[in-house]
Length: 188
Image (cartoon, rainbow, N blue to C red; front, side, top):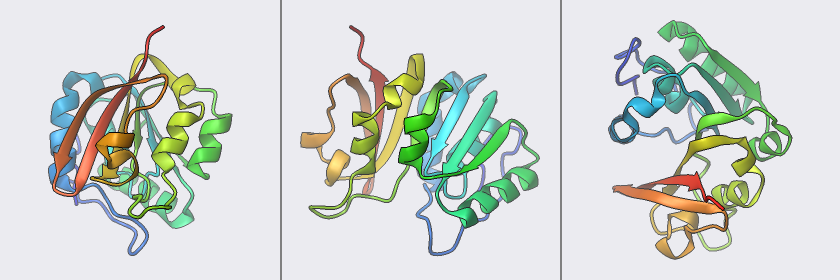
C-alpha cells in the first residue's frame, strides 16, 4: 500500500496488522480520480482511518487539512508514523470512537471519508447508516461530499438500502466486492 499521487506519491504506508482492511491502491486511485480538483484546499475528515490512506492521499494531493479518527490506539500511532514518513503536514489524529466523535464535533469539512468495518451479514452493525442517520450532515460544508466505502450487497452496499432522508446519492461505483458511495446533503 502506498500514497498514489501528489507531493508524497510513491511513499509506502504501514498498515496495522490484523486490525484493518485498507482501501486498495486501485480503489483509492479511482476514487481520487473521480474527486479530481475537489481535494485541493479541502478540509478533510477521515473516519475509521485505519492506516490513514484516504486522508494522507488527500493531503498529498493538496488538501488544506485532514483529521484522522480511529478507535484503535495502534491505528492512530500508524497514521502518525505514516504522516511523518510521507513528510505531510496539516494532519491531526484523534483516538476516539467515530460515532461518538461525530456526535460532539463542531468543525465543518468539505470532504468526509468513512471506511468502517464492513456490514457483511444480516444483523451486522451498519456504521455508515448510523453516521448518516446521526448529525454527520451538520459537519459538511455547503457543497461538501461524504464518501463511504461498503461491501457490495450488504447494509449500505445494497442498492435497496443506500438511500437516506436528507441525503442525495450522487454516484455509486463498484470495484470487485467494494462499493464507493458519494453523498451530498439534500437541499431544502
